[in-house]
Length: 263
Image (cartoon, rainbow, N blue to C red; front, side):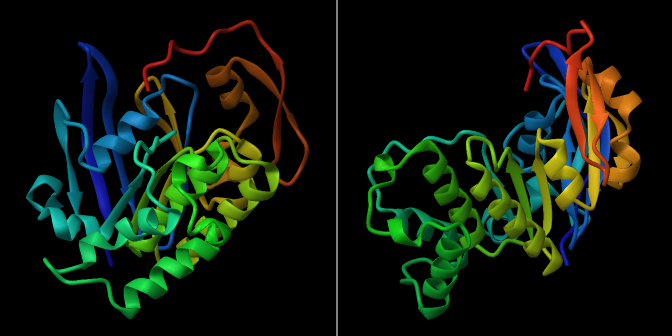
């Protein structure tokens, strides 16, 4: 079963350090939340783990093999990346766009088969977009389009899923649905790492939380330990109210600005 790991990972953008000595391992069967204030380096970390951004130092490995050495098709079968606020420029139908998630599984010149069709149908249903299958993606709302793009990632049945703000812009019903889907995928053995800002959702659905501050991992563990009011207040510059069951509500600003955005 696949494991994605980073060791002593450092990244700079425009000459400014964004990640500093980050180490982590994404294991099968874990639903892990990546949290932290704007500018902490969350999106940069996901892009680097996916092999889409170079690092200044450190390594990313997939099952012990340096990520750049893993053939692109093999990497595509095992690792899916869902970008933040992705746009679609071509008026593809929803079904055709989701079908693109199967490309790493197809040999050259081979048409999709029954297994591919089943995976596409399953992904459409999971993301509640099967009713849109014949519509152009460009005709959908932002929230609907976001669910279609998640379906594309899920259609490939990846062993590891990196998702950047997968519930941003969704209504409460679909936020819960997407979180349930990601939790269930993890329970079935997929390693899921998702950038999330709603700490109530993190506390309810995620078994592990990695907290970033200014490009460094400052906490890594279960929500009950990481989502600590004092630590959260220092990082986010707000006072938090504990509603019980691990649910923390941002209550008032403390007048301390979080870091300038970099991610």
